[in-house]
Image (tube, rainbow, N blue to C red; front, top):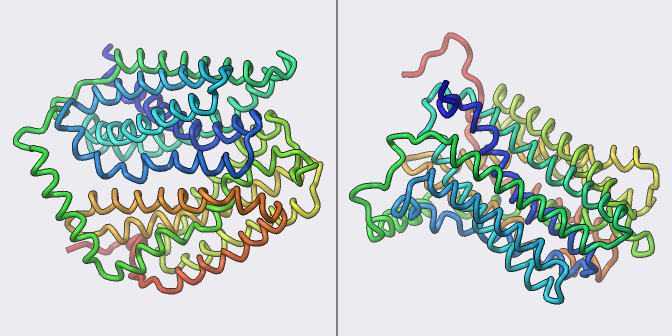
Length: 430
């Protein structure tokens, strides 16, 4: 039996591998730097810049087919990601730990973004239309599983190692990242053996750098000629402003000491609260959002989703004021906020698809995802400095005030009522 012919042998592991480095640079790095003593200002500023590879990803994505196959890029990036994990592990105990770890996180981020490009393209080449539809839920499930493993299990392991080695924080986290290095080397070896070699996966003939640049220039031009272009771009940048401010500071709040106004959770508790309960809430909210939007369309559910992505943020105002010590209470609050975010984020993703409609929908959607990454990068750059200037409670009140921006931007949208809605049975498309 040829295992590579069976998508079950590589689709789950491919998308698990896609999720781990992303969560490493976006979440695990936050906890690492907090444990190593950096200020919230420094942590949010440095780690927000790690969004940049996903912001500029559309600039180099057309060029990867000029050099090697997508299969080659997948294997090369997985090996480089594994090396970057090893580099982080090696530099954590050194005197230049900040410069060293940031350099390797940058390598990991660029490798991960390139891996995303190659993996998504390879998925469409290696599977036929039926298999693509069948496995779309599987790939999403294993990507979410990577979120749980990264934000949950790995952070719990780091906290346990801190206890075992009697608070030798740098040594404990170094061991964790060496483990991640070993995991990715194993994934690389598996995919080197198992990934099929589709005949369509080759270097594009007759395509040069100059033709790609011309096509990209035309893509940019047509993108900015769309109807409601200013409203659309502002919506992409500002719809998630509250979450952009909240996402990094909320993690720091949960693990910061009570003397600094935080909840003082241990890494094990944080891994369970945010990396397990929170991710489950996010996933369930997203599933529900997809179901209702597919039944009734985006326009009908836009305002409930706007409320869902903003109003539950108030749980952090409550926690910053009450400073609960009951882990159940904290879990419920985080679940509510993440469930609301998952439900409300559906409107954002559907609008990106809606805005991208037309002749160049694939290229335009790639540009939309760049604005999506930028919408999280910009608020994160100054979120930590703002929090340290005003304290956690006032910061979370400011986050609630920024929710008004989400409501304002949504009010300007003009959406076809039929978009996203399931066609009644019996209707035929001409």
